[in-house]
Image 1: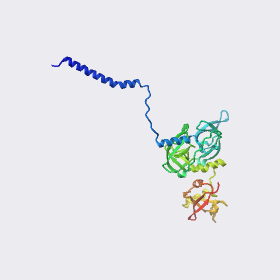
Image 2: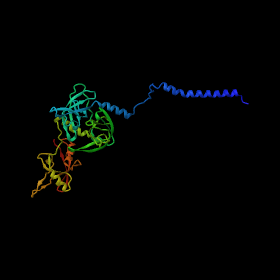
Image 3: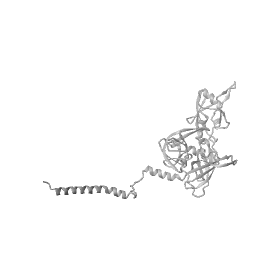
Image 4: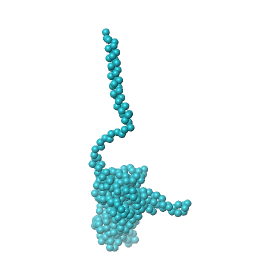
Amino acid sequence: MANPRLAGRTLIGLVAILIVFAVIEALPGYFALFNAGEPRVVAARGALAPVEQSRIALFREARDSVVYITTRGDVFDPFTRSRRGVERGTGSGFVWDAAGHVVTNHHVVEDASAAVVRLADGRSFGARLVGSDPGNDLAVLKISVTEAPPPPLPIGTSAEVEVGQSVLAIGNPFGLDWTLTTGIVSALERHLPREDGPPIRGLIQTDAAINPGNSGGPLLDSAGRLIGVNTAIYSLSGTNAGIGFAVPVDTVNRVVPQLIAVGRYAPPTIGIAVDGRLQEIARGMGVAGVAVLRVEPGSPAAAAGLQGASSSQGGQLRLGDTILSVDGAPTRTVAELSSALGRHRAGDTVELELWREGRQRRVAITLQPG
């Protein structure tokens, strides 16, 4: 027969063991509650990935060359019957040279009566408009910085840009200053229609986030070189949809020096006059090109033997030469011809494909200043 006293002691022992286990399990939660106000131990990060290190270094190197632009415009106050300045908008830009020239978009400063350029170090300067080119949406401002001027951005070439390569955009979207976004070149040679003029041609397309306020800021390659000037987005909502456009740096490098020198950009010419009626006649004959109305005496076109239109015995206009392409780029309209010539400098030699009286031929022609 079992000993009742022994059985009781065994039961008490088991209960005690269970209580001890319960206390041990509760201790971590108790201490965690007791230490809840203490910061957690920071986990070791390790080295940043090489691509991150490169991106950080590039942003730090380029940041001081990017500026924040605010503009003011004059409006008529009917109560005081006077004009007063109001804030018109904001945009971005970048330092072009040591003389204090700043490049931005034409539409950033269009119709503005005053502009202020703020540097990355917080200093602000009143800016003077040096020149503007609506056709390529580029403008140049001038600021006077006597102490610690920001460095100009290194210049690349858009002729080497490839679809798929990495790009970085720095600007001030929605007034959020010195914002970095990244992406790739998603297409080349894009055309951007405009309501008030011919389309801007030859643009770089990127999926790097570009929003209102990024306009005029730099598009950089992975070496930190300028390859474009951010100019617009394609969006139904007005915000980034993954399609942005930049003016290629080769265009910038042609236009900006002229804006600085003479305040305007005049693309090179070949010395011809054109007429809209002739284009209709050419199209009616199935010829897609720019018909030449007149060749200026002593011009490159005259030296190359181009012929303008003439009158038949019945008084009807008869086509002379029709320009089909420039260096292989089709010139179906006057805008396309101007764009093709505008990609060159005066003194460059280009090849024209011509149509005359049912025959095609090619001629080399040297461009003259516009």
